[in-house]
Image (cartoon, rainbow over all chains, first blue to last red; front, side, top):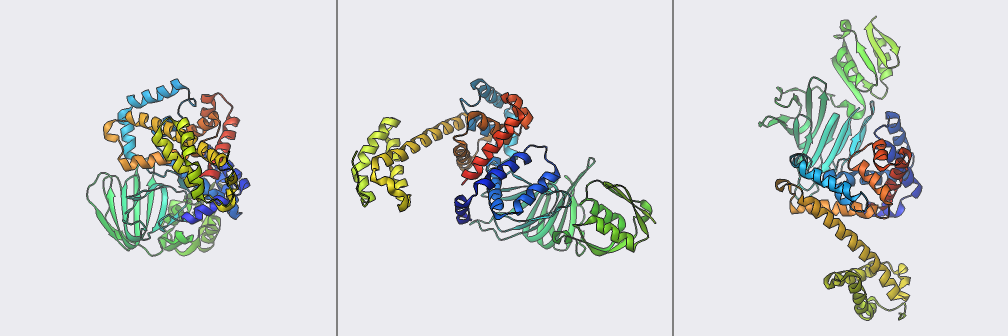
Length: 328
Length: 168
């Protein structure tokens, strides 16, 4: 790893560095669109020099993310830079806000890598982490990676990830944990997926294990639940639901495929809508129709056409962003 | 200034110029221990410089002062960073005080960032930190620093570019 980094230093293309900086500026504006994100991805993959520059750009973000703001600003923007009075004010605020500072400190341990990794709607992204574990991000997903000396922590903010754990190369192997809004999932030599589902009304985390075991611990529940290969479950902050059998092909999305095995049309539509912008509705009268097949998720319009061809249904396109499935 | 022969070994240069460099550094630092450390570091740099870049050794003292000067600046920057860090930590309530290992790590990270940002103009640096550490929007940074949003964006690109080139 280090040797690669060393080589990067010598081969960094100044133009690629400038362009990567421009992308970072745009993506950090808080106003970027999915189209920007895609354009950045295109730029990045169009040229190996871009990829190298981008890796360093991500390293910059990660490094900055390791610094707690309450400490970083007064230390890095010290004297002469901020007005003296302004920095005194910051420090005064720090004193006044002590309990809060403490709380944020506990919640956000040092060494954190807060660089956000996210996918757009319809995008599925594969990555290999520093320890060799493989992670796939399903559509519309947002995670942080926070590895330190004691823990390999993946924070799942929204969406779904699939993980294939690797043996930790650290001298003392660190546990690999996925943290969702509702609790933590610890991998025990495993392939598994975790999905964070949050609506206004409730927030749940779904876990499915295809190999090995995982341990679930809900936020406000001290009991540890051990989920085996072939099982799935879900949990809220308080409760872990009874385990059920995992259907074959449930992790098909990792390979870009939706596998439906006698799946109700309503569920298929719910799955597809995760990969599309806008509204996708299914008329209640046809929700229970059964669907079997393997569909390429990268083209959901095509899936809808296929469904229309094989079922007595009709696709009503009100606009490009409002599609509904009706009885034929 | 004495002129060394290019084939002079590092050991020769060391024995001929170490005392002189030490005196020079003491004048700059006013602390004998730190001067000795930096003199040592200066010669260490010399040892790790590839042969083809050692042309400066024809004028060892000029070369040594250039390297030492840079180390002195680094030293002061690091010292002021550590001071600001200690001041900030002192204000954190006792139970939240990080462990010594955590401190080292954050301090190292701060130092790395500080080194990368060195050389940026103060407003560029401030804009960058407000965005990256405080998460302020460009428009808010513009207001706070009394510059246009376009300028903020230009600053952001400058700072990111520098970091991308320098991060190690």
